[in-house]
Length: 146
Image 1 (cartoon, helix red, strand yellow):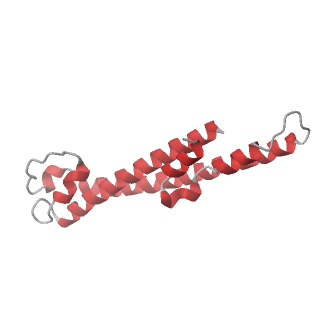
Image 2 (image 1 turned 180 degrees about the vertical axis):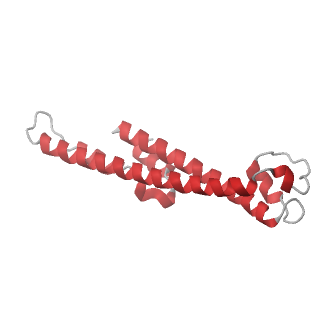
Image 3 (image 1 turned 90 degrees about the horizontal axis):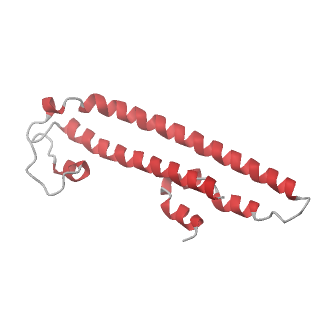
C-alpha cells in the first residue's frame, strides 16, 4: 500500500487538516530535476513547506496534549480512591477491559452518577490519547518517508 493512502486511512477524521501534507510535499520534491540549476528554488519551497508543516503539527500536538492533561487532572480528582465510592461490584464478565465494563455500571447501584459519568469520560480520554499517539506516529513516518 502506498504511504499516502495509509496516512489518509489512518488519520483521525476531525484532525485531517492537521497532518503533514504528505502528498503536497511529495509533489513538490518530485519537481526536482537531475543536474538542474532551478532545483535550488524548488528545494527552498520544499523546505519552507516542510518546516511550516512540522511547526503546525507540533503546535497542534502541544495544544491537544495540554487539553488532555487538563481533562486527566479533573478526572483524577473525581475518581480518586475508588474503594470509597464504589457501592457494589459488577458480576464476573468475560472481558475485563474498562471500556467493556463501564457500560455495565449503573448509577446509584454500583457508584454515584457523577462517578459513572466520569468513568465513561475516562474511557473517552484514553481513546483520545490513543488518537494523539497515532497522530504523532503517522506524522513522524510521513516526515521520515518523504
